[in-house]
Length: 416
Image 1: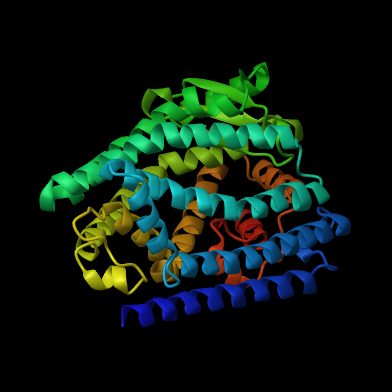
Image 2: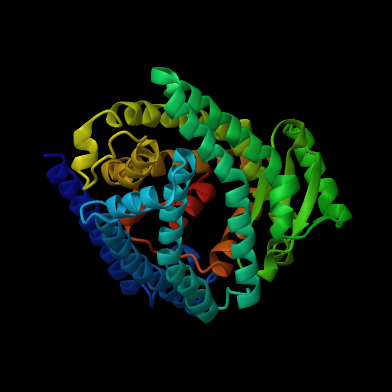
């Protein structure tokens, strides 16, 4: 019965996402040759066509990737791939902790290798064709090695700790594993700005006095404490522009991509930053963190129950090994299949995110300039080849930000 339910949800998920992707393709390409009236005179036809073609190329790749991911999931579960891998590792390793860690690592490695061609195609074919990629193959390999090192260095102790908790703390393991996960996330937040990010990029203090003064004044008006303003050499890898906050507490810092500073003037940078500060002032980050923590606990509680049900394993093509711990098996199966059963919540979280974006826009307009924010958004839409004409249903299902037309209309009418 569970097998039939799994197949039904998987097909529903796959077909729904395929239908949405095809709607997106048709809608974007149908509007390729006409700039929306709201952007007439501000976005050129060539730029609009480029954005449509870029969106279409990425959408086609995502369709192929989605079918491959579904095939891999079925191969690991119903076709016995995970079962065979678990049995083989059981013959190779006698230590139970090592065997289970190797099972987790092997699955992640296999999935990473299968997904690698899509990453390479996205970056070195699609982004290269549209002028976004600035990463060399050597830098890509170096980044991949560093990423693997970080994952092994931080992920291995986490996995080992969770497996030990699952196997040695009885029915209370869920709560102890949840606390471990929360502590780990806080550790990553602390490590990222000072240890992890500098492994990949160079960060230098912002050396534009006028911009620094404007930002510091904005932060004071918004009662936002800053430890530093930094510029990141994002242009080494991509022509896309961005800015982000990192750290927490008194260690919070603002990081600008150099590509962003090269395109926006002082007023526009201030407006974009005011928008980001709006997320903090309205506690969007805190709310998302609490929501994430609550969902993590709910998932762990569900996993705690499912891991004790034999049908959970057999329904997914796996027979647990008798006399040996199957905690890693339960973890892998659960996190492989849970997206299949929870795809329907995607539009809810997308709607919540768009609501927060409108609220942050209102904050930005109040503390900076509506004209400057509009101008900055237009430049970012243009430079990042963001489509101005997404399919409404596709946008409602996936998009974390409001469609360009609706967002600029709200700014123009003061209804953000």
